[in-house]
Image 1 (tube, one colour):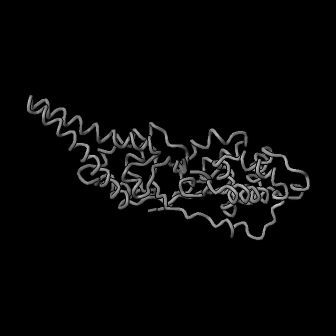
Image 2: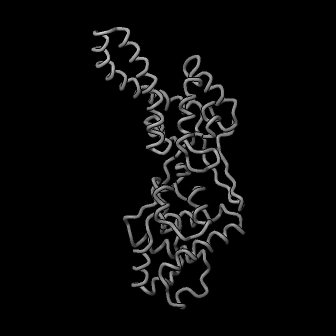
Length: 295
């Protein structure tokens, strides 16, 4: 069984996401079932009143309510929380598209409608068996919807002092322009730059040069610095200087795991929030957002 999902872009950039195993997914399902049981218990109080009027009608409504809550619970939460339910959120799991693209509503519906098949004959035996036999640990609902469940481990905040240590930042020679640049860069854009710098060693050489060139063009257009501040600076160094200015001087922006993606969202996913803010950088920034530089 493969416990890592690898996605390779046409440019040769490979991103990987740790897959959730059957045992972890079972515990997440158990938590979700407990939540569903709580909801059904509360509904049962109302339905008992209906049964006192007509037992057959009350029983029929109870069965319909159970199926509605069981299916609607997963659909509603996975759509609202971008691939997570209560159980998945507590165990840091997330549903994403198997190709690393944004999770679609129809995929959520399909995988939840087939949940009853996976649960046969009891305790998710069919779904668990499918997970053990499938190389991406997918149950039947995942196979039909083309989804996978990944783990989202907590990411420690990078040590920017160590990352940027010993590097002269020529942009700081013009503090008024640096302040203007800091104000014009959104948190989502700053996170794209940070993730590019952090993951630069993961890219193929040609893709690395092209990625930093596209990002540098985007950020250079925000504020024009004098020639003495930018001449002779490589695109990658310009991005390091930008990260130095945006993160060290604006503490409200943090590189927490809520901004870093699988996939999650999905990676993933933060993708929706970045779309309205990161525009005009070309297809390379869009690729970086969709393939994992942002969550």
